[in-house]
Image (cartoon, rainbow, N blue to C red; front, top):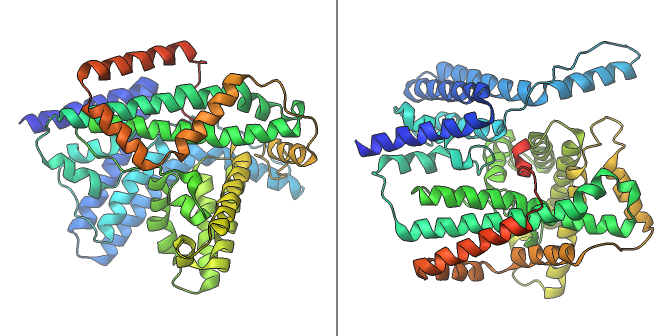
Amino acid sequence: MFSRLWIWWLLAVSYYFYCCWDWRLSGLILFSTITNYTAGQIIGHSDSKTVRKSWLTLCLVLNLGCLGFFKYCDFFLENFKMLADLCGIHLSVPMLQVILPVGISFYTFQTLSYTLDIYKGQIKATNDFPKFALFVAFFPQLVAGPIVRAADFLPQLNRTPTYNDDEAVRGFYLILSGLLKKIMIADVLAATLVDPAFKNPELFSGAALLLAVYAYAMQIYCDFSAYSDIAIGSATILGFRLPVNFNRPYSATSLTDFWRRWHISLSTWLRDYLYIPLGGNRYGTFNMYRNLFITMLLGGLWHGAAWNFVIWGGIHGIWLAIERLLFGGKRLLNLEGQSKAFLFFRWFLTFHIVVLCWIFFRSQATETLSGAGCAWTVISRIAAWSGGISGFSWWFILTLLLGYFMHFTPVSWKTVCTERFAQSGIFIQAGVAVVLLMIFTFFSVGGGAFIYFQF
């Protein structure tokens, strides 16, 4: 009885959490939930291939159609009009100004993975609608991930909830570390240089813009991993396990390695539900390169309805193909026998390819087919290397160095810090929390929402 009440309570809290943003759009989550639950029931209990395939197709059309309308409608209308103008056909195409529901990309992918896993026979359909609804709307990770698989989450609902003091303290520590990344690093970097530089790049020297690019690489990592830390920590306090979403991504020695460390829940989703169904590497070298490129293009478009995201994904796709061409799949991740100098070269090259791509990701002015905009201005001014670095506060430099230090800190160090915090007395834990919260309040620059809320 208590377990049932716990599920209903969490479900109610999760919907209330989402309704605080816009209660009207909570109907989309309910629609997605009912659609995938119904499709899962029919697919899971039917022996007819035709029925199973028909319901899977219907489920894909409804889910992706809903995502496409709310996220990409105006983007496609705008580019259709632009293409018509290039062909000499002048059309009056009104923009619908559709509101983008927070988290729609995340919960759409999450629910689709459930239905696809049932279709592939990897999991069985659940007959418990409230549990499935909680899987879809679970509030800690609802709006910005990690993208959770039903096979990992639903079994956690089949046990009586218990409170574990040690796990709760570890979860609280993750929340504090997430707040530190967001408030003390990501928001400070954005306010002091990144936002002004990308808003008006023509006013900054090439050297200052290069520093802004390095700062943005750290900002987006700290911002997004901070939300993941807070989500995982909150779930841990409630007795749930969510998957790790980041593993020191800038330590990667190849782009393939980077995508095993960055936004892990999305990269594995794209691999399992897009790259492999397209054929993966099973049908020849050319098809493998094509599948990589398509996967990364769509992965870029998943982030937003703008050409800068498509360019970002395309560059990643091209370089992933180049890596496979030069090294092959297995050699990319096998570092044995390689000299330290060569490993350093691979890391240096990978890191700067990722940083270069972030320029397009951050630039919001490359939304037209011409591709001219902020990204090209930033790159051209960096290449020209005009002016010098000046006017930066010690606080910005210290924040940037702190961010990179925290990122490259060995996982073993972080584990030791977590365990020591968990094993310290309650007064020490409370004292650390109070001091950090006071620091957050005093040094806050009034940062905005998490970056990935817009996706």
